Amino acid sequence: MRSKILFCLKTLAIAYPILLVLLFFFQRNMIYLPMGGRSGDLEQTMTLPIAEAKVLVSFREKEGPKSLIYYGGNAEYPPDSLPGIAAAFPQHAVFLLHYRGYAGSSGNPSEKTIVADALALFDEVAKKHGEITLLGRSLGAGAAVQVASQRKPARLILVTPFNSLLDIAASRFPIFPARWLLLDKYESWRFAPQVAAPTLILVAENDDLIPPANSKKLLSCFAEGLAKMVTLAGADHNTISFHPQYYRLMEETR
Picture 1: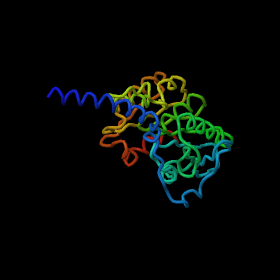
Picture 2: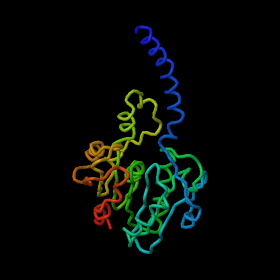
Picture 3: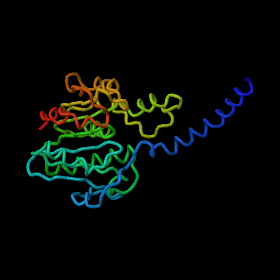
Picture 4: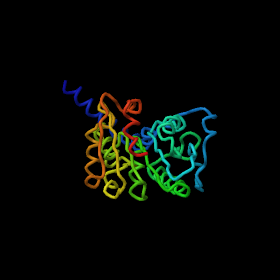
């Protein structure tokens, strides 16, 4: 028995550092999961004026001051989300960012590039539309909070947001030192206090990826009375957008 225990300990001592190295170098492959699609889906797109990369944006243009910018989840294919959002916001011009490496955009995704492109899209939309609603889902909520802290959107909607990606990684992989390994931390709690826009947070009751308790931690970081959180009963992380109250709760942002 003693020899078996020693063998297991030696194996662990060898395997653990190897796992740490693999996690460090391949972590972005685990965080960002670009989805494939059909080339025809990219016809209704525009290209952001960014020199170092080709960054696409799916859009539905609409005359008038109102517009909505959407930052999607880590495994989302932006063109698939355009019809539903456009139908829910019929008076808004709608713009969906394709992260680098996603759906025709070049380059590689990271927190730095996603936030930079998200800010660039806001500035581009602001040239024609003076009233911008930001809608961020899951990973995209992390980008939306940072944009809202540096720009002046009319409203902010966060769907299944995390307090920080670091929190989620640490809770899901407690045996690894996430604080030291993680390159893209998306610390939304750092940026929430600088947000001035009225904020709606939608969470899924049965979300086992980003638990509502983690979203509630983020809620407490906003200025008092600025943000409110609504829990959608019976929904989980991936089905929240099918909940009958999902878009109805956003109606107040129109």
